[in-house]
Image 1: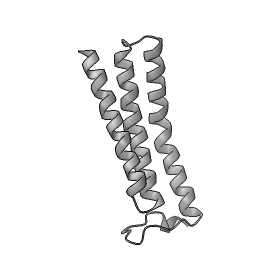
Image 2: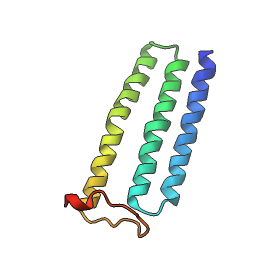
Image 3: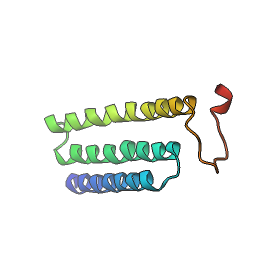
Length: 108
């Protein structure tokens, strides 16, 4: 049962990573590309790591390392993406011309 779930999590994680790569190529500006890459890292890579945890047999040495990496990614990837987006906005990176709302505009 855990082998099937582990492989399913890995497949779903790889699919998220592939869709994130597609978003990096297709999205029009820096901010939407950053969102695509952050989602793929957070959901895709964490799914792969959880699948590795399940396939390794749970709380073995490899499983604990996979869980620690998963926790590290969950805590740091969204924060890093927010910091990058904030710094890009403050340094003047333009939004896409069809952007509807600019939440950071008032904070300048």
